[in-house]
Image (cartoon, rainbow, N blue to C red):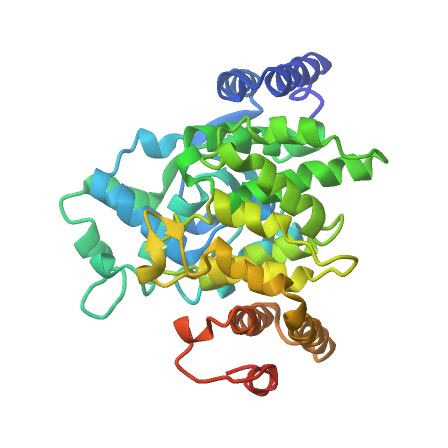
Length: 416
């Protein structure tokens, strides 16, 4: 290690990271960093079979990968035509066999996917860019079931012999993997922010894929960093830094910042990470769905006096994210229109909101107390939250065929 990580290279890469963060020119600086690391033998390029590459726990600001999302991403790639060169713009880091956090995170992604992505066969590397593409390749190799009808064979599964017919480059990628930019396992130790920096650069290349939840998690991560250092969050600096990757939601970044500031669930971002788990478990037919500026701004501006209802607000996001196809307009979720949210602040409805919020909290406590496995918790709690929110908005009939007239009726159906 002493030979690889000389003081000279450590100082040089630190200077590059600072340059990129200060200027916002993360893409060009990331290319400089890659060249530097390769020149010093700290990084290299290698073809790696998909079953050996998982996802870094910090990937996409801890949003990770989702099963349905990876299949839709795979379909879009196959439609455009598999490009070995384009697919080589991916990066990963060597991992230790004792990295239980990475193993646990990747097991969770597989469990939440509903069978759409298999578990990593042997976790040797964790990706910081290219995770969805690799998850799709892994799913193809394992002949997983698929939610994308155009990818499915007669049994509803991915069939490599059919999907790769006449596509030798894709067939090779499924079998042998993509060409990765691989960093030495010690890089994140020597440069603690290199993972987030690289992800920012790679997200800028693929900014159309960076959804609002991912940006919210990024905002929270920056906020938490200030708090860990004993500082008050500099929201202006946080906002500017989150814009470096040129996210599609840049025009309403302030609304996302406001929501995170008031409803993230504290320093550990408990509620945001719960949203991320829900997203992976319940992602519906289209992966690139958006909440939109009007919905986010309205939700962030709701006030209840001295009272707070974080589970209810989070539930509104959950419900809108799983909007049925007939409630999606140009990728915008329309199950809950901004005007519907007014029902939550009506004084005559406050008792019902309190009752729903308490039930949401009680359900979480009960699941934790009896040791319900996390992926089952996510699905049970997610379904409850959505039902309760839609009941409060008097819109439950839009998604639920079974009639629930009261909150008590919904409580009795927990787990169904």
